[in-house]
Image (cartoon, rainbow, N blue to C red; front, top):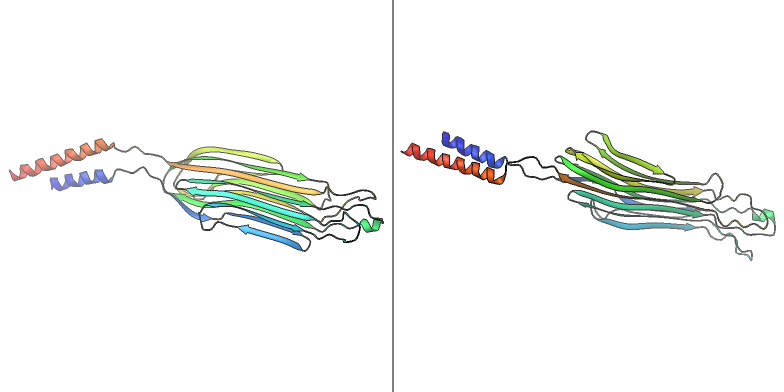
Length: 286
């Protein structure tokens, strides 16, 4: 009986030695970039997603639209509106890391109207325009143990707007979210718009559970394209609208080691138990 007990104790000691390991499991991937441009009856739209879930994503996308010239007569300087948008992203995943950077932009212009022979003829506003760009990283993951984390990143937004009617607008937003889904608590939640920027530099400890990272840049310019206060001799060629937003992020995890027996100590314990087993066996035979 003593022999079996000692052998069991030795085996338990060897099996109970924990390994210093941490596993991050990627669960959901919703990354994409998109661009859309529309002027009057003309439009263009494109969207790109990764080739497969959690694969390397490095791409850019664009969209462009423009109105045809309003007249083909000898009167020069009468042009339709133009709109274009773009977005890019580069993102990847490591065994214990998430990396990404991206951005989006949207631009539009009324075109121009020069002097014509009659004021009534000059009332030729370009058509409506709408341009949108978006770059989005959204990933859900889980970890099977306690982990230390370091998270660095930034978000930035900017606008440029020429004088135009109040129906025209410039929008942009950038956000950075890091959420503990298991406990439904926010670790980081930052959103900016207009002309602004924010930096992220956080570190701490995460418990085993499920987490979500969302980083997004969205831009949009739109309007009816009306021209205000056009008078004889004036040229309205500077009605431009633009917006941009960009982001970057880098999350790194590392396991938190717990005290474990030194390998040499464990070996000595095993050897001592083995010697004791042998000694007990010999005593019984004697």
